[in-house]
Amino acid sequence: MFNKRIKIKEILLQSPGQKGVVVMGWVRTLRNNQFIALNDGSTNLNLQVVLELGKFDENTLKRITTSAALKITGDLVASQGKGQAVELIATELEVLGDSDASAYPLQPKKHSLEFLREIAHLRFRTNTFGAVFRVRHSLAFAVHKFYHERGFLYLHTPIVTASDAEGAGEMFRVTTLPFDNPPRNEKGEIDFKEDFFGRSTNLTVSGQLEGELGATAFGEIYTFGPTFRAENSNTTRHLAEFWMIEPEMAFHDLEDNMNLAESFIKYIIQFAMDNNMDDLQFLDQRLAEEEKQLPADKRSPMGLIDKLRFVLDNDFERITYTQAIDILLDSPAYKKKKFQYEVKWGIDMQSEHERYLVEKHFKKPVIVTNYPKDIKAFYMRQNDDGKTVAAMDILAPGIGEIVGGSQREERLDKLTQRMKEMHISEEELWWYLDTRRFGTVPHAGFGLGFERMVLFVTGMTNIRDVIAFPRTPKSAEF
RNA sequence: UCCUCAGUAGCUCAGUUGGUUAGAGCAUCUGACUGUUAAUCAGAGGGUCACUGGUUCAAGUCCAGUCUGAGGAGCCA
View 1 (cartoon, rainbow, N blue to C red):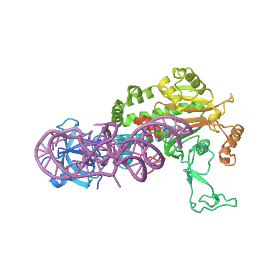
View 2 (view 1 turned 90 degrees about the vertical axis):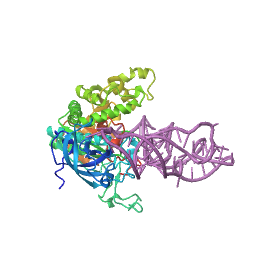
View 3 (view 1 turned 120 degrees about the vertical axis):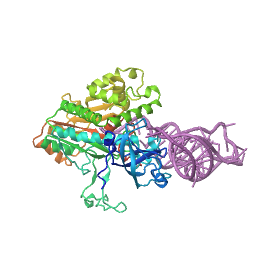
View 4 (view 1 turned 90 degrees about the horizontal axis):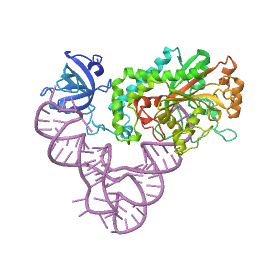
C-alpha cells in the first residue's frame, strides 16, 4: 500500500505538529550527511528531510544518493533553518530504488539545455523541465476546459489520412508494403491497392478538413491531437511531430473567429497563472538569469510574468494585411534598408517583417487579417475585393505565428473554382465538398500550435524543450 | 535544404605564433566535519582532444571531407 503517502506539494502547505507522515520521492541532494532535499514531482519545491545524527546506520546513509527513490516516515516540525517553513524529522527511512551516483548524469548544478536534450529520459527530474511540463499539463487541461465550457465537442480526427490535397506540407507515408520489393502495377509504379488501406496513406498534417465535417453537424467542435510534418526544418520553433488545437465553428465569421482565438489564448494563460504560479516564478527567474548573458538589445523588455500579465490585460492589435504592409513601408527599418527581403503588397511576410510588427512596432500580439489570396490556402473565404481572403494569423512576440486561421469558403462554386486554379483534386475531396452541397453555412476556424503556446507561456526559447520527446530531423532517440 | 559558429575528462570550459608528460571548476571515489540550502575541507582516480584522411621533423592547434549539435533563414503551427 503506497496510498498513505502525502504529496510534497500538499505537505509544504501544512502546519507543523503532525506525526507519522509518509512521503515518497527522489533525492535531489544530501547535504551535510543530514539533510535530504526530497522531490516527488508534485511541485518544484523540495521537502527538507532531517536525519538526526546517529539515527541511521552508515550503509543506509551511503545509499542516499542523487535520484535514489526513498520512502520516509517522520514528524513534521517548524524548520530551524532558513529556506523552508517546515521540515520532516525522519523516523523511518526505506530506499525503494538505489541510484548509482558514479553513473547518474545529473548533478545538483546548472546543466545546459543541449546536454539535457541528450538525456531527455531524465530531464524531467530537473527544476526547469519539472516546471515546463507542469505548466504544459495545465495549458492542455485548460484547452479542454475552455471548449467544454463553451459547448464545443471534442472531435478525434484521424491520425492516418488518405488525402494528400491539404497542401500543408510534406507528409510521412504510412505503409506496410515491403521496401525492398513493393508490388507494382502495369506501368511499373508502386501499387498502393496492395497496401494495408488499399490506397496511399500518410500521417495527418491537419485535422481541419475533417473538423469542418464535425462543425457542420455539431455546430462547434475542436480537435487536439498530434500532427506530423516531414519538412526538413531545423529551427527553434518547428517539430516533425507536434500538437495542434483546431477549433471549427459553424455560424462564425472572421471577427467571431478572432474573438474566440483571443479569448482562448487569454483563458489558458490565466489558467496557468492561477494554478502554476510557483513554476512560472521559477521560469521567470530562470529567464532573467539567462538574459543576463545576452547583450542589452537582445533582452526581453519585460519579465515572463509581467509579459503574461500584459497580454492578459491588453487587447491584441488587429490590422489588415494591407495596413501591415503600409506600416512596414513607413517604418524606419524599411527606410534605413534594414530589411533583407523586399516589402510590397502581395509578398508573404518574412520573419523579419513579422518580428518588426510584433516586437518593435506594436510590442504585443497582433492579429493580421485579409491576406492576398495567392499566398493562402484554397479553402479560405474570398473577399469581395477579389484579391484577398478572410484569413487571420496571430503573431506573438518571440514566437512568430502562433495561430493561423480563416473564415472558410462556404460557397461551392467559389470553392471549386479556387481548387481548379490551385490544382487541387475535387474528386479526392468529394466528401469535403459535400458539406457545401448539403446545408452549407458560413463557418470559421483556426489552428494553434500547442508547443508554440507552451514556449510563449514558459519563456523557453527552443521548441524541443517544451515537448517531452521531440521529433526533429535526424533525432528520435527517446 | 542554405548560411554562420561549435565539438578537448561525466558536465561547463581554458589550452599562446604548431613544440616536452593536455589543465581548471563542478561531479565521482576515499577520508574528515556536522543545522545544511548547488554544504564545506583534504586527497585520489578520470582523456581515442567528434571521425577519416592530409601537410609537417612535430598537429588538440593548420588543410580537406564526413558526422553531430547550436543559432539564423526558408517551409509553417
